[in-house]
Length: 171
Ligand code: ADP
Image 1 (cartoon, rainbow, N blue to C red):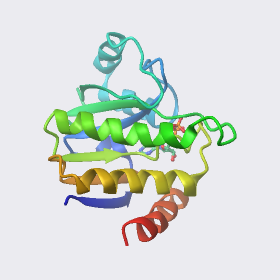
Image 2 (spheres, protein in one colour):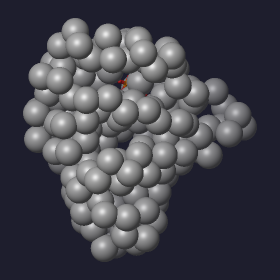
Image 3 (spheres, rainbow, N blue to C red):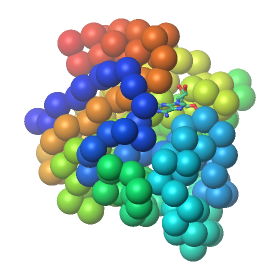
């Protein structure tokens, strides 16, 4: 079984095999973590993303990391929170599960995630953290070659929510 780490920080500094980008469906860049990743990776990342012709919510696509310390960037648009009745939970699960499957297919052993959908997309933080931890735990139990998954929380409130979800889900 792999391990799950939770830390506060900036995902663009992570020297891992793959970082995950909370993208939008155009894959052409945006604000928040998406903007930070494009800024740090340099303009080649946008050129690579333009070749991908977008990505559906909950799906994932991969590029190189260019100027980032990470080898790959896995781009996944999480769901926009509406009222919880629009398959938001299933779609958020899919973003984590499809990103991990793509990482495993590219022989990544270390993967870092931001808190997908809890910024501009307004997904309730505690619920999102529980889905993230449950999906990552279940994936690691199946041992697909991924060894360390780090949840990189940008602020203290996000860190506290993921630490609570870890206690609830992993123990
Ligand atoms: P979404 O549109 O999926 O909600 P956002 O980028 O708006 O994506 O927010 C997702 C999370 O990423 C938020 O918790 C936000 O604070 C966080 N975030 C923003 N910049 C960074 C960064 N450089 N590293 C890690 N997390 C970040």
